[in-house]
Structure formats: C-alpha cells, structure tokens
Length: 560
Image (cartoon, rainbow, N blue to C red; front, top):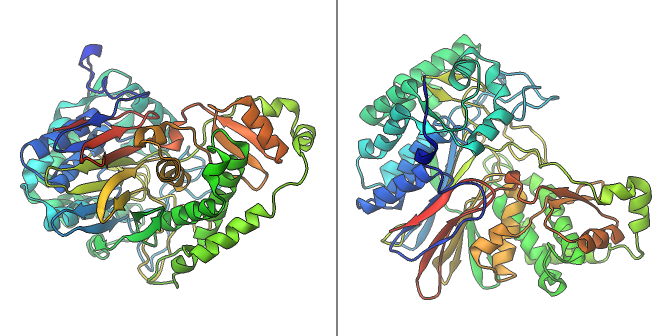
C-alpha cells in the first residue's frame, strides 16, 4: 500500500467539502454524489454518450475505491430507474444475502465500535450484493463496454486519492471493526496509523483486483478469481459456504411501491424494504392533522409534536413488513387512508390537556432543557447517486458497505463489514436463515412523479427511515425547493421516554413549547451528518434540470 503526501491545492474534494453547497441548474444532464471524483466520473460517462445507467455503474465502482468509509465492492446496491422510452420505473434489489440453512457466522465479536456495538455478537457474514447489482444493471440497460466503465476505478486505486477530513473522521469512528483482523489492520493502518488528511492513498491490491474485474466482467466477483478467494477465506474462518452460494440468490428487478400524496405519485423500494410504507404512513397521518396549518415542524412545537409522534408510529408499524415470499404482506393496510385517519385521530385525542413543562423540569432538571446533545450514533456507511441523462432517464440509487461479506476482513484489497442485521420488529436490517429470505431494510431511493413524469428524485445515507419523510414533507407539504428541504433541521422519532432529538437550529421558544407538551428536547449538532445528506435531481415546470448534494457531508453536483 502506498502513502504519499499530496499538496493541499491538489485536493480534488476541495469543491465538495462539508457545508453549504450551490445547486447546479440547467444543462441537458445532471448528476450528484458524495465525492467530486465520483461526480466527475458520472459526468464524463454521460459526456461520452453513455446513459444514466452507464454513469451510475461507473460512479459506484469508483466510489467503492475513494469512499471506503461509506461503501465497498462487497456491499449492497439498490436502484430506481425511470426509463424514458417506456415511462416505467424499475426497481433493482441487490442487497447482500443471508445463506439459508447455515448457522449464523460472526467474524468479529461485539464491542468493536460503531459497526459491532457492545451487547451484540458482531456483524453477520453475508453473501455480497454489490457486484451482482452491477451485473444486473449492465446486462439490462447499459450501453457502454464493461471495461470502459471499470477503468476510472482501476485508475483511482492505482494512482490513489487524497484523504479528506470527513473521510478521516469516519475512519476514526469506525476503524475498530478492522483492527480485529490482520487484513483489516494492514489495509486501513498500514504503518500503525490511520491515513491522515491530505495523504494520497494508493491501493495496488485493489487496483489488481479491479483490473481482473475489467478484463473478466462482473462474474470475476461471483464465480471468478475474487469469488474463489472470498469463499476460501470464509471456509478458513469456519463459514462453510461454497462457490454456488455466490450466485444462489441473484439480484432482481421488480416494480417499486407507489403511493399518492397531494397530487403527486411517489415511487420507492418495495417490501421487504420498509421506506415506502414508512413515508406513506407519516405523510398520510400528517395530512389528516393538516400539519402545515400549525407551522413548520422545526419552528412550531405543535407541528413538531405531531411529526415526532408520526415518525415513532411509522417506525413501530413498519416492523410488520417482512419478505412477502415468507410472510403475509400488511403494506396495503398500513398505507390505507382509513388507517392513517385512525392514527391521526389517536394522536389528536391523546395530546396533553395541561402545561407539563414543570414535570419536565422536575424530572430532568432545568439544565436538561439547555444542554447540548451529542450526534445521533448510527452506522454511517452508504452512498447515494442521483442522475438524469440527456435522454430523460433518471437513476436514484444507493451503494453501501452495509450487508456484505465477512466483517473486518479484506480480500484482495476489498474491505467488508458484514451485516448488522438483528431479528427484531424494530431493527432496520433483518432477515431469516431459512426460505431464502430477502434482507429487510429501510433505504431511501425515491422518485416523485407528476402526470407520470419524474419531477424530483432523492436519497441519502444516514437515518433515512425518518429523514426521507421529513424531506418529502418539506417539498410536498410546505412547498420548499429541494435544497432548502434538505437543509432544514430534522429530527429523530420521539422516544418511548418522551425525548425528541433534533438538530439544534431551533429557538428557545420551540424547546419551551415542547416542554409544555411533556417532551424534552435533545439538541443534536446543528448539522448532524448521521442525519444524512441528500443527493437530489429535479425538473422545474419549464423543463429546467437541477441537482444538488446536501450540506451535512461532502459531495457536489454537476451538469452537462
């Protein structure tokens, strides 16, 4: 592994640093990502005549080189693709897969940092989903040669990329998982230290692996050289998988879940993903409560009270979503307007009748109302891409290090974190070790349509279960432009102990108003990166295209 110091002025991410960003408007095509090298790669593919799928494949492949704090080539992939020629929205599910009928395998014990918290058995080993997803996209919709799409990733691994301050921050918070294994230590701390800000990180082992991928195609990771080395390492670690398991549950295309709100149609991932049901529940409840009439939920305590409760209800209710191949599917019930009206009535008729601020002060102390909170502690790693090409095709997709491979191990330059899935009703990731179950998740890929055509596509890493409905509400209920909708303060669901964590760009009157409703406000950092940062594209009424990356993490947007 090569490490050299690069001069500050050559840092390629200087145009995409954490903080406020300017949306890109105009052009024939737009794209956004969490890293300028990824955005530049996607833009170049479209400039060379590739479509949005071509650009997304190339973007994912290089992103797994330059953002290994967020993704890798052994993780998972999901995608929504609006095909202009047919007017159809296609959904790709390529989550990492549990191996049916084999005991759960855990390489790293609990207590190894954010990805293996104390009290758990550590992440579970799973079959990687990243490259099966790339294969499915390439075989169905790509137009460019495979080697051309892999070439930027090969170059980035060979020549290195400059480590950014945000990248270093996340490694410092998550590297414990990799310190458990020899291959992990060699990869992330080759000289006994993490890569430092400004260093150029070249990865010759990964470059060689990606050269094999370019030459042999996606099957290099499914049945070829890398797959064989992965299976061999798994068996050395007493996980008795075979090469057949690598292709037993391939990525698949399906139809996304659609639901309507205020004259718009929202397309999101279908069950076992929970996001569509979650969002429909929240916005449906709030529509029956006429939330905008109370003010914005980051300004009005009454609106925040209802939003926080709606998020909590959705979090609990969507615990009943599972793989429809194994369980009955309650999505229709949970998304029905009648059910939303019932839940709204329950909230309306359970509000406090008296001022409860004295109770909050007596039980928590006055200082609790003024204290600065800490960042929301959630696994951080995923990347969102948003693209619209010159032919009018839209891609909104995620690639992530989550739910892929053997936790803490690095095989031929490819790091892996496994899956922090837990079988629990409220777990964001869960699956079943029989029946070939698909992994249940909450992922953010969203396309909003008007009269059958996309008007906004959006997605984010971080706490997407609760942030997507808030951003959608900002756009569809409050009429905000997409960047402002992302920038606005957002919250976590109300806890069972009446605490509301919200980014601390709120007034003292807001905090006092919630206290009167019996809610203690826990102020998060003003811009908490765990609350995500959105990559979005949108089309104005006159057809003008725009795109942006959000302020809470690095990233940028670009246009042709």
